[in-house]
Length: 376
Figure 1 (tube, rainbow, N blue to C red):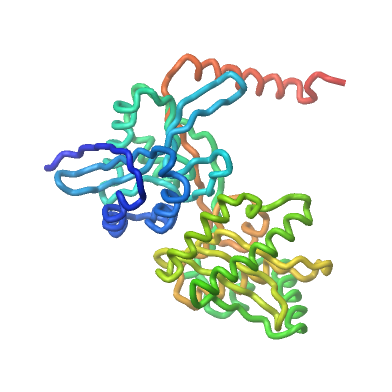
Figure 2 (cartoon, one colour):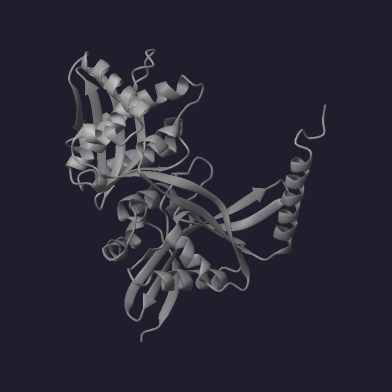
């Protein structure tokens, strides 16, 4: 039986790992956020300049795992400093591209070994690092981490969140049938909204047909998204130029590959909404939206756009319409399945972290006992 082994290197450009990544993802159970489309854009736009570490795991002569970690110095609670490594993300200084369904890229049937070998390598060969962050991983990947026998680190679930999706395989193609699956009150509201829009013209959904049109849709999405957020006193994601540059590059490079979907929803000549989605292995990931704002609260542009996008993708043979993680009410209303995502930290057992945990626990107990803070 061949042995597993791990090795690492620093890379200077995304193409240094392109061929290996593309070959391995064919045999891996991976999300779009682990695909070469996302990862190459992240490497080019964000990670290469951060001195990333690539860890490869081999089984005999076969490459069965690959991952990218970037270093960061963290300051928490004023006095705690940590040197950390982050898997496939760099959530600092406007460089947070909000990865979800994260994880090591691992060949099927080798996942547990890839996680074990990668962690063993990190702990042994990066002794200067205090923490290793695995953000937004699924329960199955959390299980891989928990099965590892740790001697020098704590495996901490730092945060968890529900991710919401629609199992399209459970739905008939008829849009009315999907609406019937919703609550009576919300179903009536959406149908009323659709009737009101149809008075302004035919209600339709249109996919971008080429890269140029996709970028045009993305620009219109930006306008509607920003307008809606500014109406609430906030800026929205397009206030971050790094985020916008990242996604324009991804659209430019991967729309023609069928990995990006831009949808436009209209009533006659009126724009109702735009949706920017990823498409990967028949699953649709809703990354960003822009919906029209109306003083008439009966016009539910977001709900109508999502319903039409759900029905459209069902008709295209997609199996999942994924609204991803977050506590927004519309996700709970529209979706028929959910799963948890976890933010996990492997933390070395150092005195400073014991002090940090003690301090956090003390403050939490104080706030529990004196919820008003003790003030007048």
